[in-house]
Length: 165
Image (tube, rainbow, N blue to C red; front, side, top):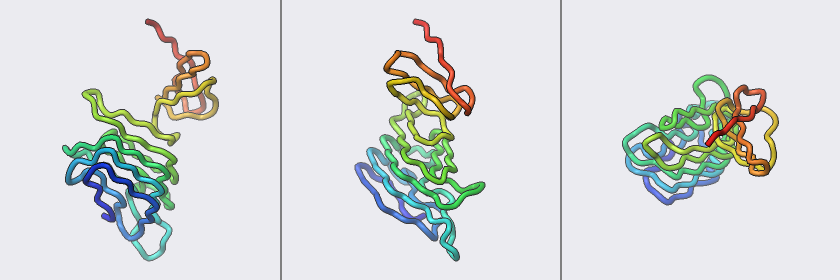
């Protein structure tokens, strides 16, 4: 483990991790709330050293982890078992080489609020026009221009949802 983040109101940035199987471990020993991680890079291409398996790891422990913002998490390696973000609390495991943003909100009885720019995990997005292009199945898009709600049913595109009151 390169970095333990087990406290609140911290910002960690511009970190390159090589030689550790886990990069930043959040909330394993105590509560970690209102933290920001930015520009965290797992260097799995550095020959002769152990590659990070998890660049950022949020374990499913009894310690409170909430309001965690991550911007620009990168893992230079690819392949099975190598994750840029491994969030066991929401069962979100991203093998993306690059994740622009990942935010873990507060815990509720129904689970956690979560947002990510990764196309490999469902999320809720808002915009002022209809969405287009590929999407992560299960994602929701709110069109504030027309008031329409779209749901990603297939990774190839969006379908409109019918909402009744």
